[in-house]
Length: 388
Image (cartoon, rainbow, N blue to C red; front, side, top):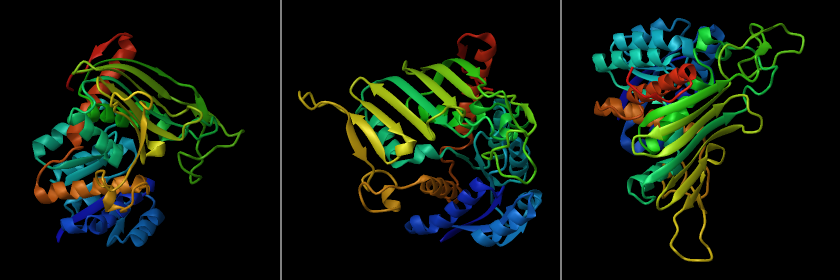
């Protein structure tokens, strides 16, 4: 059994999900001989750090994230803190020679993400980035079909991530809505998933033409100790200005000639977590939506009249990774199962001393696209994607 010593920074929802995933790897991937030893967790709120340490089985907890970086036994640092803290923490971990798992968008801005990527390249450390949607068994199956040429040449792609988490005007003005804290808004928050999925399935994006919009321009100021960024303020609470975008829409052109659109919105009304795509090739087409993660619509016509059309595919043990969680076709797996698959690949990359995607290289790739989108906002025209 190969054991990797892990420290986790930030013990909110995502830090807890990552920690549970490390614990699940030894069970779900038992035959691979991998185990994570949860050495230390860190959170600035002492009660949350202690509770997470006790609940999740960490040997130690701390309120100072530097303790995780400086711990002599920790080999891998997992960063799930708010976006505005990522750069300092990631660069410190890289400087200390630790392998780094960082939640997207990695940096507050594309430039920060590029700086972290270049630092990791120079230091020679391994990395991983939280782009969990690409690990859904049916997404992996879709990529397999594309790579085998079953869909022919990909000609069209439409990707989106629509979420209602900021659709309520009484949603508190957390750091996510402030440019000085989070950098961009929805572009940095969930558009990385949309861009990464597009480039994962189709090809690198070469040109973009983007726009942005703020639908809810003011929000109630948060009250210390009352709730999270999902919490509601009260109608009479004082308000502050939202300083980054609720919506981003982008026209894209891929290196292989495919044409597409990408959208992301946090203030739309209706979709709960609609991370979705539709793609069309010269021989077939696919539709997938995370809200029904274990289903996919597949069009592979056999030239038979009368029943040609999209077919509903249900995830099962014949699709990548599904059997690790249950042996039955049509029996669903969930969000944290995807995080377990991520944790497995991060640990495996360390044991094998081999970089596995998605790492900081893929974060750098979507950061280059995001930077081009931001330039397009200013120029109001098409912009080439170029390396930062």
